[in-house]
Image 1: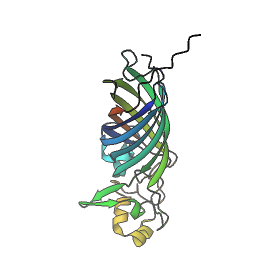
Image 2 (image 1 turned 90 degrees about the horizontal axis):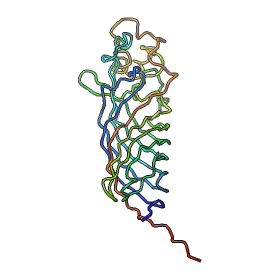
Image 3 (image 1 turned 180 degrees about the vertical axis):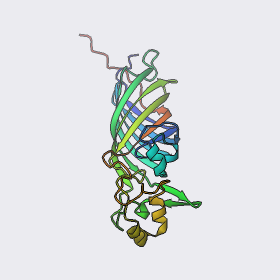
Image 4 (image 1 turned 90 degrees about the vertical axis):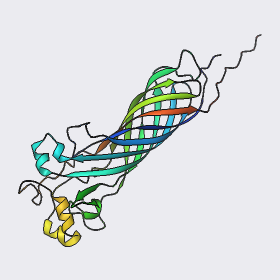
Length: 255
């Protein structure tokens, strides 16, 4: 049977890890992964090209105390956040992948597309966890806080291998660059602490400036790097179920 014309849907789930890259992880450290999981639906246009949508979850966190940079350690900021991610990507298989074939049963692949992510950075102080956006830690006025939803671009690569004609395993790594610099609540400069206390309370001041050395948190001093947006990665292993038909080509009429 010639299966080259194969099309169809796939549905599956994945488990893995997430990592954050930004102002509190400027060295792209991979030693603090969080759990991640998701659901994927894929449509195969043929055995080379497909489209995949995903609903994904990740947990990210970072702490300046773990940094190798002296300024960052003395800045002493930290955060954690749950991520809820909706993505849509186009995939390209390097080799033909035909479910049920004895020869075309595995391939590396690449993909790219867009995503939408919902985040909400928190930090702990005195045994309590606080949502940082609500505290305006960089002097944002009430009603002018950053959005907790951002779009972004996704690129990735992976490897697909069939278990049988219906089930396959996919190993994949994606990098998500967002259009926000506030996944970690850190972007610009330290605010006026008197004004911040009057507007948001002393907890906001305490979480805005947790520096270990006097002067780091003075008004106008750099708190983050606003020229570079935040990123995160998702690495996982998917189990996918194929619901399409194993199509045979039409036999040409003999004249």
